[in-house]
Length: 386
Image (cartoon, rainbow, N blue to C red; front, side, top):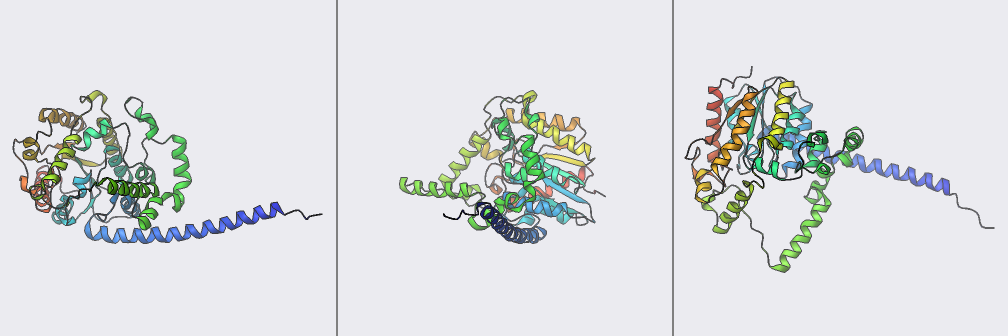
């Protein structure tokens, strides 16, 4: 009679073996992530911002480091989207954060801008470091305002918000029927990720590991890119590369056309702006609540736009702009926070030749704006945070 296989023992052995393998892989992942964190910190300490390559992946590593620090000097945090980060500014010290750091040499200036960040992402980043900053400078880039209201998805970088344990509660969407509630994790999902999975490197830093070895945030994204590359090659489609640090006037005509088309679309409202049903305004209200709760000083200001480019190409309706930004200004000032509007004049605040596109400045223009911002902050008497 054939001897029965020791199934139970075999299962136990396989579980133990799998556990050992998982522990080994986790330890390896810890080493990979810690090395990337060290590299990011070294770069950010020197350059005032995380490296240009995929800041979406690297920003949480920098924030996690900042959360562990006890600063001896007052800290000024700058928050917003790509115009704060300086996507088209080659030298990080030429960003407004860099200019302010030179002037405020007895204080620490942190550039916590994130390219593509909508208002929920900026709220999450601010909430993550609110106890580490003494003063908040919050830039409102008009290109982010319509898309925050237009898109049914609440955020464009949900993984980043989850890693920071700063997901937007679903109940915040109750009054916004245009928003997809499924785009926000449930409270049960948040409890599992925050309480369990985020303590496991292979889950919490999966995007970091993917980026380290595949230069992409997810394997799915990598596969999608490769498929698109093959399809484009078959169809004879050549992707347009637009040099990020080159002024608009020195770009090729087809590159200029692509920029104009993109920003015209970005500034377009799918439905007329309604201040009583604006998710963007709601997120700023929550931001103001956060500042109040932690008793933080703050100034809000608008990113200066290239009016010459916008007017020559009929890219937005200025009456609509002033209606929208006027609503934001009214809300912010009603809570006793300062608001600086840099787009009030008919002409450009920063000369047209220093723009890469409708809102992004190249190095020379960014230096000029940094100095103007410093002067305006000085006039408000808020550059001394001591």
